[in-house]
Length: 85
Image (cartoon, rainbow, N blue to C red; front, side, top):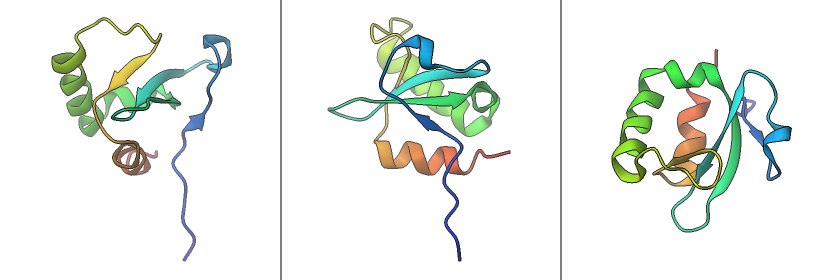
């Protein structure tokens, strides 16, 4: 059985590297890792729950330039793998 990777693009550069229709998110507990995800993920119920947690924990101030998500990297990758179209 083949393992299908989620449709996320890992980048670690600037906003110029974010393709149209995508947004940057920072994920991780201690060390934040930058992911570029399709904006279609933002409307999904599982991702909405994560956005609500991010709002509670971080508010609307995201000094890193993208959304900061309050979860471990492996949990985020697992979540986004279920959001594939």
